[in-house]
Image 1 (cartoon, rainbow, N blue to C red):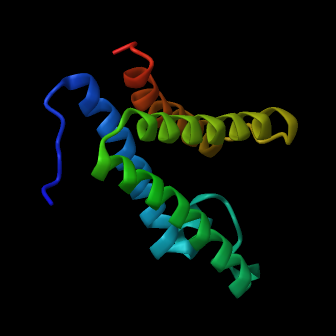
Image 2 (image 1 turned 45 degrees about the horizontal axis):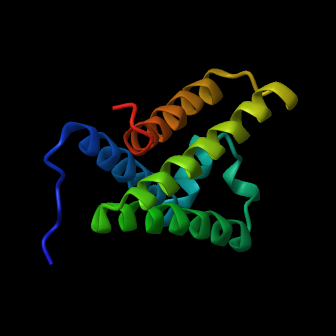
Image 3 (image 1 turned 90 degrees about the vertical axis):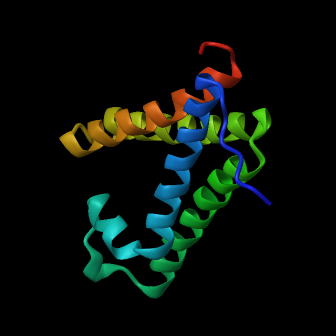
Length: 127
């Protein structure tokens, strides 16, 4: 099976968004302690169950991103965009409701919005 790489630029943007989602999932899956530190957690208090939860979440992002990369279907791009968009919404709610207005949160919010916009823009016809 050959890896399909889109020839049209709008679909390439969606492809890059799916790739970024898969890379984030790979980071969470393989390096949960470093991912937790990046997210602002104190790693010394995390149990094996906590690491399992982070790896499990990484597996979801990795599986969703890889599925979109390998199958290159509009519905999968839509799923990637919706998942990252809802993750960005959750982060925005945390900024507003939990007094989480930090540079790290704003940077990660912008990253999540950008990753969500790439596949959603393609599927919804904005690109």
